[in-house]
Length: 311
Image 1 (spheres, helix red, strand yellow):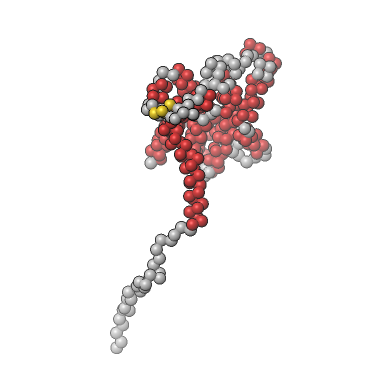
Image 2: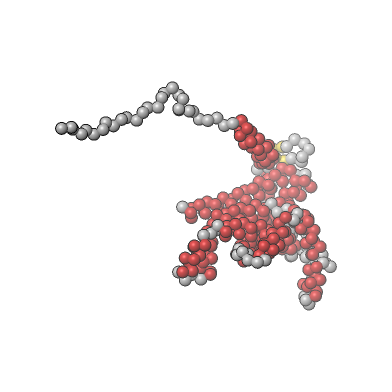
């Protein structure tokens, strides 16, 4: 009688130890290293090194000709007693709130109105985005013609019977800053709209269908579905708005040069006039450091809060 026995288990074959199968880490081809290192070196030469130099110059007194003289925190102490700096800082905060808030709200509203693919919607998207491709200087020149005493705006006010409101918008200390915000806002809305359109396209339509089945109103769908899904886009929009607000220079300088009597002065225009007109490059570098700290502080605080909420 034959006895059946279980087949013997064979141990897995060992790989040869002559090194043919086991290979070490592959080396990066020199061409790939060149494509990575060359842009990095160019970035370090044209961006990072000048930025570090700016931080150093903020601690010096320099006229651009003689050797820089180290003064420590003297430039920053001078800011505490600089009336123009305080005025420019207040205008910059106001610009950030009005320009940033209105561009985000109006850009989101435009994206919500134009997100549906229907006839003619492409024309309106292009019309809103068109100012983005215009030069800021060209935009400022167009609006300067609009704001002239005999310009389009005053003529329009006269045509509708509001002659009492006609005046020199850019020459009035009470309206110069707000008049400058309008062309900057006109240009920014289209850019923010495109960012939000990209975010809206990424929302799953099933979420809206489920909300409709549960009886959610349009406002509830916007609040509980759209806004949470746009959290990552909001971070990008905030970063863009803060950076654009703090570096707004072209349109302000072309329209008012910070005047009249510093009524539309921003930190960016004050930094330029101080550094390149008054030749106080050390103090101008200190103003640039303040702008950097403001931008970094606002963006970093929002990102930290967003990440905490996500966790």
